Length: 326
Length: 299
Image (cartoon, rainbow over all chains, first blue to last red; front, side):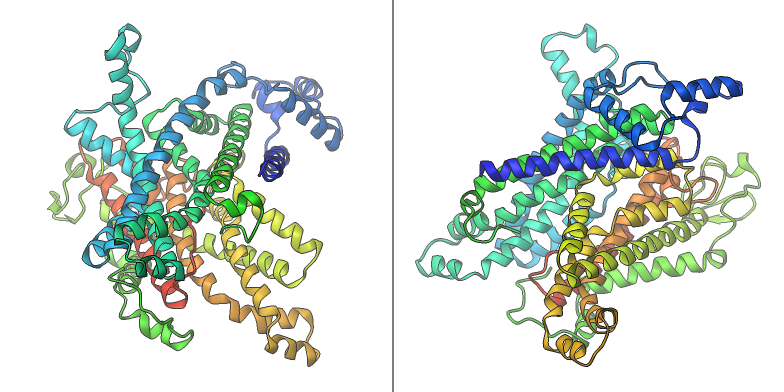
């Protein structure tokens, strides 16, 4: 198991490295001269040349790549063009908010999704049909639109919940429970949006996995032993159906991050996604580059976590016997 | 949907299309997609001009199902510039469906090429292609889209290319599996024995038999591509106004959520319906082909 995780960690590092390489060459391919961008439109030709030399853009491409990668690995990510702040500091402030939002909504949407999927597979009939319509609707909902509709209902019409930021303007003056309540109220809408759009996919997948396992011989044996149908469903079917579902956890992380980017943009949630979108809109390359790298690293870390969970759920993976799951 | 699954697997081929008509999901999906296509194609006949506005003050913020002073009827109301929401929705369908369809076609081309090559020619090329597929699957797609949108000027062409080039991995994996399984079948050996070239065997004999699950993945991918196009346009990084796309329609309605919620609601409902339609159609076809095959949603 440890060997497996180590192998995954190495391939994860390769993914992050690949993202960095991809970013470097995309930057070079893109139209526009970064030196000219930095010095501004009023600069003379000499100033542009000097800036180009200062940035190392006059050197051959492999040397530029090596130098750029070296700086990136050492943590020298440059400063934001629009704010002048070090990019690393901006992102160090942003990533906990994203992890909080994505992590909690991941847990919630999986718990609810698994519950709905199990209920559908066990009960069948009309309830299954009705819940299928609900889950496919949730699956089809774009997060940014659902977010807007929730804002319309809960912020503008009923005035129950705030829609912008992670804390109110007066949050610094609040103490104790009031401060916590303020935080929670700001957390409610972004979390609800991201969780709701996640439930659909999970429930659909769990239902399918349950129905797949339900046809296996060991389930028929469990029934023949006279076990109650609830016990068969939970102890025998669900346990085995969960293995591919846990694998899906890792696979759904990139999608969840993508969703979080939109949600953070809508609710002005102070996370990596908002930093990224604001950087993109302002064409603030150092910020965009760094936010991309941090997102990739977070996704890779999440995948590793899912891998470890699969090993915990499926002894065959842990011991290296038999075919792996999904 | 609807009760327990049938105990026997339906045969491939003709029974697939016939069985679909008895599946309510397929009927719903086909109806929604066909309806959206018709609206997109016939937009000039079904709606007025979506861009120009004659009289902003008299016609702005009209609620759905009302007529303005000039006697023009607005089934979905008007936006803050007095433009007809239904007309913008209908013309936006052209952009959204067109971009989504073309993006899926790009994904299909790349995915089939990569998957077929990796499944047919073993050894290091296959390993390299599969490694590339896994790498691309691990990338956060929207982050990559945003990065690209920040480097180049946003346009419909760029969105098609970028969506297509970030959506081929699921298809490549499916094709890879199918091609590997088909390559050892007797009819392929027969074609090789008759002296057919590698390319001919692959293109004429193997790929046509590997296409059905690909079509399912393409249907699911279509919904995803339309949703992502709208997302990019919503952030102002996709199709640029005044050209209407469902994404930038939602974005323009964002500012008038209080005065005119219908401006943001209408394109969102259209988007949800189309994505639901594509998903349910894909589900129905998949269940007909193979109930145990699970096609996952890729980010």
